Image (cartoon, rainbow, N blue to C red; front, side):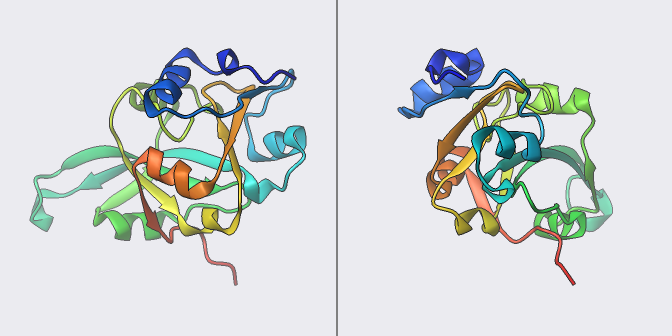
Length: 172
């Protein structure tokens, strides 16, 4: 494993420079595509991994809006699942569903499994689940399926332009 900033995806490395962030980017020989893979490689709890998940929301013109659809990024801890109904309510959307790989790449500039929380190709609304704040440090993808970086969750959410929300599935 290495810890050079050059290990990050070039777009993400540029975003770090623009934000003035100096964080260690760690590269692993095995993929860190899933939260479980990343946690095992890093040696942390799965809940300390940040999943950057893209969804697509639809609004109806009948609901008084302009209608249409838009991607939204949800930042979620690695041990939790996103509750689509809670995301829909938060957005005031008619429908929300997981984006396909094409929309993820078009929106963020990255492939699924390597999407970082910021440094995207387009400006996207970001919802950050409050559960991320349960940790001193969280780990997120650095633009590739083999790279991650640590940051305190408050800074990560701020740099992502995220709105703090409660959108994880409730447990019984």
